[in-house]
Image (cartoon, rainbow, N blue to C red):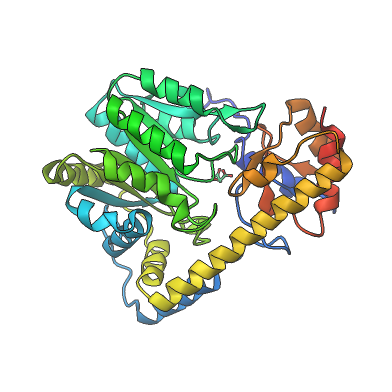
Length: 397
Ligand code: LMR
């Protein structure tokens, strides 16, 4: 019997939290798990500008014939322009971009390319990193290592240790960096740190692989890509995985791209052929709808401005929730410092919860967080903040 040797697997560390939350009949349950934005009513909206772009697209789209393994060419160009800004034009002939099945697809195609062209490469990821980074990249067959990133005591970036570590990595090592809104810690590099890091990356000949899953979710569309642009202006080669899940609210449309900046135009042209072959062999072509919507929105100045202002609204809500929750924690535990909550950026913070606390949160308080103790700030609301604060404070050591 084929498959008879397969044992049942444990739940996915993040998606398993959603499943457990859905199965909990308690009316008081609170989901601080999977990284989706929520409004005050607990809904994950499609931004109005995205819906408008979608409607406009439906009016003019006359075919759904294949687009090809590289996906939607207009999307590829516009999404890279959004990320790289004024640098995009100058780098165009050295950039090979493939539209992928979400940001995960971009990371996976990137890992496949790395393994195919340099089987001995080591991809270094932050410690800690998003729970799916290592499974996603590692199952493409690339070797993985970790670099120091998070300082649990200060709840900030262990920058000196990180820099020192980068300074010792062999030339050609690949370093996976979260462009903004570090997942799961919420601790980001500041402008000075990005600049110092870029210098070491350039001098050591390291290859940055940027994961940009949250552009516009930290501070704004421009500030969130400052580090990426610093690197792109400096280093000869770079990989960039882009996701439209959060900022465009296109989660289930699986819309992303992998842009590879190569040393020269001929290499970029060759990379494009390998990107296409990789996609063809794995899934053939990406789904078009989300990319067509995002391309349409980005190409329409009015829709783009409306979207940027909706995004700004989401960011100010998340920042306000951070203030609110920090205030509630401080009121309950004046002996402890919760200022890290307002220093962090994006949807996530590590709340310093151990596995016992996480289990107790779920079983006693019906509050759901992933096994690394990450909390999704967007899951907090005016209505549940008291319960969130009470529950977390009750399980803190
Ligand atoms: C998350 O970190 O929760 C999101 O990126 C969703 C996912 O696929 O894990």
